[in-house]
Image 1: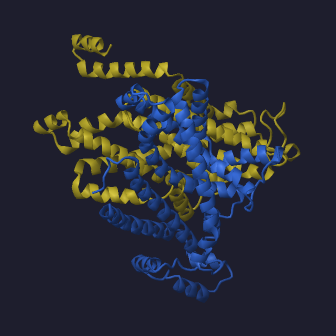
Image 2: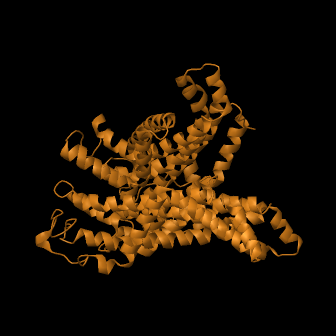
Image 3: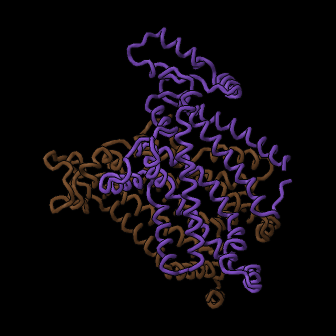
Length: 306
Length: 299
């Protein structure tokens, strides 16, 4: 187990080095001189040269790459170009908001998605099941920013139950969290339903029934535990969806998180900030998928890590 | 059913072709019985018609502004209302189907070509080539959804061609992985070994024996990726990073309409509905094709 953990962590290193490399190459592709673009038209050649030097832009890509990676390893993401603040501080400011939104959405998605999927499989082709299947199909197809706008129109503007944007009380959290959770709820409901239907046909489920285990016990203790493995895999992949969806959800609800920071950085052409933000999200995604892989051992003792 | 078709084929001496046709017929029979799949096909067909015949179908010029009609709600003059410049929303939605379909088709084509090439090379060559290619794709997959496309578009600048390219690059690793998986399975098949035994070269084996057997998975994957590609274009355009005004892109229409949701919610909500229905259509079509082509396919 410890050995597996170390090996998996080591595999992450080249992937993350690649991620940094790719971000830097993409940013190098920006047409024109980032330094000149940042300073605007009134800048003298001397000012541009100075900024280029301070950003390492006068160095070849390989040198810049090595310098950036060694700084990142020391926990320093550089200084944002526009405001001159440390990117670490900028991210530390917005990170809690995104984490709160993402985790709430995740909890809602798992609670609703898995429950609904189990109930659907319990009564397949019932009215409830059909409704769930139609909702899941639609939930996977709705653009997340549109879901948010429709929720705002209905629950903020017409019913006036929740605020339309911003962060503060728990009421501010409800609509964005539901918006962000919608595609994941749909995905989990679909996945749970189909794996539950498969598992419920297994011999051990029949055996459990035959020896007199109550229906509820069969569903939760025997079937669900086995059905959860593919569901957890999907959940790991869905975190990518959640992190990307956060960019859109935060934009729609003016939620002061890392997604809005990224959009701001793009329009301000603040590539140091952009680089740091994308890197932090990519690391989060990779780490969550590692945790997902580790959770298999808990769900299925037959899986061992060697 | 398949057996009888095969016998007919043997009589006219075209067993392989007929066997293929009978699979096609059986597939269509399975597809036809799936009502949801037919609904998906219908949506996609309607969308294609809207895109092809846009000038004939649109009630008005999608670019014509009429400031006195601005933000007019749906009614007799404008079926689906007018936007913030008094442009006919119905016409803009019809013309927007061209953008959605074009981005979807071209970007999926890019991903299909790049992904199939990379996946085939990785799966067939194996060893170090496979290892390097797959690790490189892992880097692309380490970007959470949307962020890779955002990074590409923010570097190259917004606009239709760059949006298509970004969506295409985003979709490539998915295709490459799926193809690599099938190639790994297919290259161990007896007919591939037989072809090698009679002296067929690598190129011939790949083109004649390996790739044709990947076609059904490629069709299903393309349909499902069309749905994702259209969603991604809408998201990029919504953020202002994709297609630029005044091009009628649905995502962009939602974005500009957002400023008026308190007074004219139809401007933002109707284009979003168009996106949702289109994506639903491609999802249903993809699911239906998967069930019809190979119910055991894991996607």
